[in-house]
Amino acid sequence: MLSAAVDAYLARRRAAGFQLRDHEGMLRDFARFAAAKGDALVRARTVLEWVRARDGSALRRCVRLWTVVHWARFLQAEDARHEVPPPDAVGRPRPRRRPPFLFTPQEVNTLVRDTRVLGPEGSLPPLVYSTLFGLLAATGLRISEALNLRTEDVTPEGLVVRHTKFGKSRFLPLHDTTRAALAVYLRRRGQEAGTCAFVFPSRKGRKLHPTTVRHVFRRVVRSSGLAGPDDRLRPRLHDLRFYFANQVLINGPDDHHGISRHMVALTTYLGHRDVRNSYWYLKALDGNGLVVYQGSFSKIGVPGLRVGWLVAPPEAMGALTVAKEFVDLHTPALTQRLVAAFLGSPHLERHLSVLRAECRLRRDQLVASLRQHGPGLSFRIPSGGYYLWAQLPAPVTTVELLPEAGEQGVAIRPGPQFTPGGGGQDHIRLCFAALEPRLITEGIRRLGAALDAAGRRVDATSRRPAAAVSLV
Image (cartoon, rainbow, N blue to C red):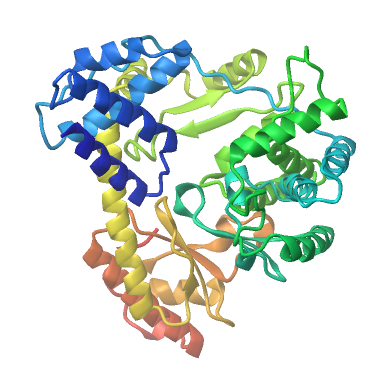
């Protein structure tokens, strides 16, 4: 029974874009352990016995426990007989990110050059690995993304990276030098790799395994002198992704607006869901404690919840605390305690599940309404968040559209309010989270009428205002 419950849980989560490879192994291991004890339901006592019976660090034990806790909450929503063990039953060690090894361009060149001369002389594998390492450094691909590339994914314009983390796909333009090196490799590969469909084949003509790649990488790192046996910080394959990101940031604009645009572009290129996930690459360059992280709980709690979080060096935290006290003295302690309790409770996951489902419903309603009533508008369907950005058909801009929208009784946010340098005149932001589906349809119908009117340059004062519908 528990084995079938694991299958159902994994299928549901993977449909939402999660891969859960490590989680699958842990959940199936626990299901076998529980079945051996005769348990048909999740029992807290059995979970704790299983966690303590397995080897690993304190953090690994916590990961095992939290994995089963999330699964048990999922099951308990349909069958209250399942037990959810206490999430802190084996402690709460603080996970620490391992500092990256920051390659220099010279070290990357050494790595690629020394990989190219691996034996056997004249064989294909040295070229496979040297091209793979060079591509990782030049594009910031995840190793799984690079190994999953097929020959048809390499186009004259760049790489098509399919069904990656969170089920997303993306297109990566390539630098001319990268495109040229890849073309040389593919010609040689085509002569020797047989019918293998993958860009980087193994000796047996199959897809390379990540473990094999990491073994070769470590071997070249040692032989190249990039790290000694006693060095505490040794290069990892993932550090080539850091190298790409850090080179992009180092060689990017140095003004505030330019950095903001660059971070958004880097986030898209790396395949991150949120720009905040890219700040770790910026933090890796920070040797002086200048980078801070901040966010708000209002987007995952309720809009009026003015409580956020901040991660900063102690000296910066002290200065920011003093500055905050000059503004509002103190955030209510009761509110903070409520947020802390909520974040550590099973209610958070349930709340997020409801929130995601409702936002998805309203997003889909907005998309359907735009396709029916928004002729000429172009847009990308957002994978998360509360908003959709739409591009206006030329030559209409927000200057012409805003008064027409006001006459139709529909409120929109013009692009220049969110764009550095005053750009975005041909874009609008539409919020789908705050309205019922029927009002979304009505609002987009009125927006379509406003678009038509703006296109015909009809005088806005000649029409009668309608009752307001806000898409702000």
